[in-house]
Image (cartoon, rainbow, N blue to C red; front, side, top):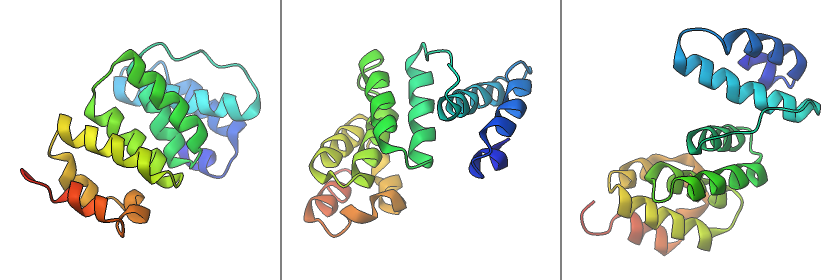
Length: 148
């Protein structure tokens, strides 16, 4: 299913994901549901609307991976509204804005992610999605600030 999705064969991928959403392995079923929603979105078929912050977050991350940053930000903002002050949501928003070239907003979310969970500094140091920010002095200040 994922291979077909990556090849933009959305109808074929949707068939696979539809079979997986009812299996007992919850994490696989949830990922299949997210991918099925994205397939339907890309083929114009209506998809069930996400209901929880976790579903919006999963869709946002899938959109980041597909480099669909506009939808990623939309989904992640909804996740943030439903479940504020979650470090993983703040981090994903930082990634979205960094990839989109909006460094100021990316730094604000990155700082929030670090405040909520200082261990995120370690991950951000090695995260290629922040490549565009590494030459900015604010990045070094945030990454190597006290407590890291």
